[in-house]
Length: 127
Image (tube, rainbow, N blue to C red):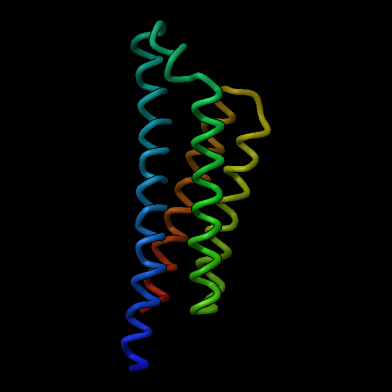
């Protein structure tokens, strides 16, 4: 019975981590694709670089990642996933405070990478 509960808890947190990793990947692809498209086609930048798209997506990613990492930490108490993921969340939050441009892109990409690593470690710590 206890093993069934453990498997159920792992599955409950695991799907949240998978969704958060997927969202991090989508964010990363968006940032990189936007940079490439802007380099190749300056006219496409207006739509892809609209600040609202980035701000809403990043805010949603921060909330989802914080929930997944927090729930994982409550279950396994491993500090490393929360510390790495938390550092990434801080960089992502910092990206929301700077002007739209290269600095924002760097903060977002590094932050998203750290959050994805934190989610990976979170899933591994759950067993």
